[in-house]
Length: 565
Image (cartoon, rainbow, N blue to C red):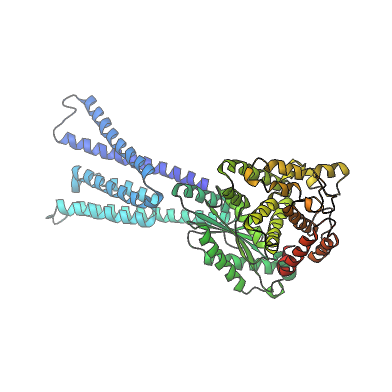
């Protein structure tokens, strides 16, 4: 739609340019006629060729001045100053037209109609009010000329005729301006149909992408921040199933209204899809975006919705993810992905909360040598490829990171160990990049050959991170996270204390999340069943002390654990 609008504006500007050029040609002709009346009779001196050349020169000068002015506007006037540039241009044309009328006979001039050029262009470009304003100014100019040059005449025929001409000026401006107004309103109504979501009256998914791309392009030039909020209604399917889709639609409408209420004029509120909304916040830092998001979250939480008492948390709430450009993303697609990742974290951590995008890879970059940054960037690309292959791997890694951080606190790990465990948890499945997609997403149990292929991923992952010297202590965590305490694991069959301590920690968390996750060939367990399985495998698959510590973690965070799995 924006491309169509730009194309239309270009064509209108082309038409207005032709009108302006025509008016300049008239001015050139008037000036040359005045030169003739001053005694340079081109025809008596048989200098018709000289006259023609003079016309071309005069016209050329005016065209060059006009082209130079337009070039200056295009390259030096910012969007915010376009109105000022139009006013300057109008004043210059008024001066030129007034001068042309005066030198062509003043009150007796037959060229007073030339003001119509300005009235027409102004009305088409700026609308009814601007057109009528210039029509009134033009009227005052020609009537003043009549009074100044024939002040003592009892009957001023020129004045009477010019009153009629003034009526033509105003009528032209009014009728043309009213038509332009009707057309603009019609276009706006069409844009609403194209750009707005019919249910919630906020912008739609397509417009969100278009607007975000435009804002990012502007931000690259101005250096301003842009924040994006992604909102998702918690347990909305549950709400729809209990209360019906009509109640669901009303809830969506009300949330859309609340978002618009909290949005400024330069914010863009859109329905991203289903029960998910998005908000673009220009010139807003990540911290400011978090404040706005929290204000929205509280507002929706306090709002009364029909049937909200039957929701799992007693009312209808939203989870919100926040990210910003350029702090957390380099382009519009990165910004969307990071905000969506933050939303996932918000829904994962109990829902009804605001989460900012946090990239573990960004943390890694701060901890490593500069020469290794490109390697870490490559790892980020590999992880994106794995996530595209198998969405389970992405959500699994996020959950493993979360539980690993909780467990690291319970185990009283030092800061370096906490970071190494977090990095290992995030990248422990990176070796799956070399595993065929068919094996990763297979809905049936793997056969022996496929199982042997899958078992290569710890070694593959260790090989990938080995070149990064700053991650030297992370490599064994990745390599040995499938070893068993009884020595029956892979790839090296290490036993007991032979297995690196942080790898033993990761094994417990990794196994717990695998047991509590939906997989095609694995019956999902609740957290109590998974904990019992861990306890039964103490001393076999898992380090007993770590299992006990993890049990304490699950007990302390029971509410969060129940909602996240």
